[in-house]
Image (cartoon, rainbow, N blue to C red; front, side):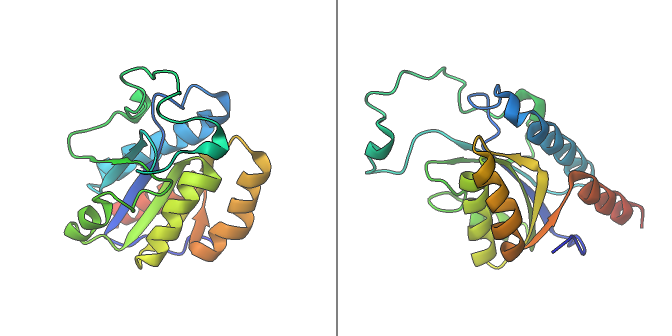
Length: 190
């Protein structure tokens, strides 16, 4: 379903666009479009949530991946910091997660409730993992969900396409960055 409207209490959630993952060329467009959205959300006085991942859910061994925290090469100290292009601001909500989605085991739900948020616009990586999991939780928490289809990326093109074409329309509305920016600017000028 295409974008119908933006609620007055809308928040942008940027999933896992962090220093440790944004060097990949497949992510450039998603990062650039997320930067444009974050800039406009801030200009409009709307919340920007920067979600980062560092680690995995407690008790998991990730044996299916062959990697555990114990045998993984050390990551740079700033691996989980938001990508510098996002220009993190003191007013941004910072969420560190250890699971695929941004809601479970974090304070995100409370942060959004405290601000009266009713709608979320979600961007980031990976489309089929962190973004989709966050969108599912946002939907289940009762938020009006918007997914910026050109501000998400996945290393698996088939998984990306499945999420964008089959899953996202069932979780909420889908729109391009340009559509969302137009709606924000129109609302700001009204």
